[in-house]
Length: 133
Image (cartoon, rainbow, N blue to C red; front, side, top):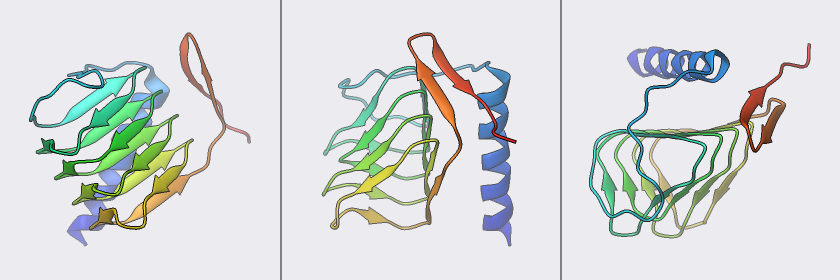
C-alpha cells in the first residue's frame, strides 16, 4: 500500500512539473563522471555510464535517458525515450511518459515498467504537453 501511494505521489509531482513549465534542477550533462543523489535534467540527455551508481532517482524532461550503470531509485523520462543497456540495473520503477522504453533482455528492473502514451510536442524551444480531449 505504501509503495502504491509513493508511485501515485511521484507521478503527480512529475505531472505538475510538466504542466507548470517550471523546474528547479540539479543537472548533470551526459558524459560527466560522478556519483550523486537524484538527477533531474531538462532539455538534455542523461547518460548513466556502466560503472556509475546513482543513489536516487533519475528524471529527464524533454530529453532521453540512457542507462548502462545502476540507479538505486526510479528512472522517469517525460517527453523522451528511456534506454536500458545490457548492464543496466534500476532498483525502482521505470516510467516513460510520452516516450518509449527500450530494454535489453539482460537489463534488470526491480520495480515496474510503464510507458504512458500522451501526445507531446518536442521542439527546439522545449516541451509542450497537449491533451487530446
